[in-house]
Length: 578
Image 1: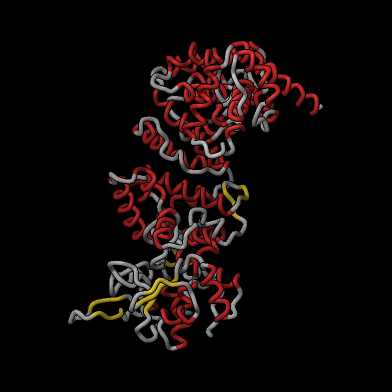
Image 2: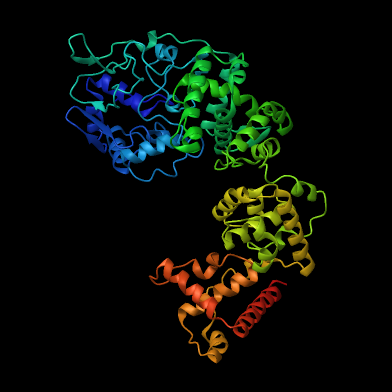
């Protein structure tokens, strides 16, 4: 059987091997014993081109004697952990693949191609299936997406919907387009366009260099971002984040100001930007995240972002990024202060660039920046996850109208951390080891409710000084010391509750442990160790109501006794740590 070429895509090898054997590609995958979804005229292996199901891998290995590693290397899973993230692809279903492809920069129904490469060899490299594929590094030309004869995307099969692999036809020449077209009498046939004869336009050498950087990262070779070596995953995260910036604010000057951008790329990118900005559905997620639909669009995006990615350091990148600074700030103001890029992960170097050049929010400057010139009253380890309820009510609540108590207390703690050294809201949450989802919800929503920003930060400053004046508490050490506190022993709790006529139950033992953890660590009781494991079938609502009733029924004397017992635990932990 015909051997695959190094770097070849699985779909390409199937086409070539079937032609060599004189059978249809659908017949070949059936002979290989692959797990397929078949109809009367076509068949398609599950996750075709993306990854091999266990059944397909077993069949292909037995039929071809190729190793599992070589077979997997012909699928997009080869790029896992770098160019593509396979985290959400758990089920071998067509719908799962479509959802994954929308999130990732990958093509599953069609490919791009270099006609000059196909003139030399009929094998299609796997990287042509990446949506970051724009130009051919060997021939310095723009890749093609659509057959000029039939007007259908290469290797899609049909104009209306993707086609499976043909089984009822004879062998298909891989040198031809092969898409399904209607003849002059309305009869269906296959497009006879010779792919190697399609014209391809030359591109600037700088764009070839940009494409090589993409391929190096995709193949997990050492990559550099702003002068530092980074993982392939971080490199692609940075590239996609900068692409999102382009989609947010790039204008006509940006598109016309680059001599390296091909004319076709300029037109394609301009049309895509206009379309994305006119969208009224799907929100920013769909507007910013999906991959470029055409090679020309990908070329335009690479032309704009590659100079920043290739900078020798943050200072150099900042100079290139400066023209976009005002546009990003304007975009944020137009979005009511919310950062449209807040859901994008950011490598450290790029986070520094954006944090410097793109204002964190027009609501978090001023007093906090001024106070950073003074010594921090508290260490970040001395800040609780939730500031005290009385402190919050007296000092902060009036500045956060319409905010739930627990959310406001969490946001106030983040604000204190900002004054004491947190570079931004996310950094403050990380420094406090705070649940990132709850922290993101607090900082992303509550900050918009502040009616008077300066008054808010003055109040936070007073709160910080008050906390420091009481005597700093190492809340981080307390969380570590009580990390295994899941219940209060029966004997201890009996001595505390029995004088008040309350029985000791297993549920109260755990509620008591959570209460101690919450009050001594300044944490959110919902995150207490006692609530992190199953409650023998009890519903979440039942556990929450039990927690509320336990706290409400606890007398001042019992609360003081529980607190004293918890402080003894902390002292014992300190003694053991010495």
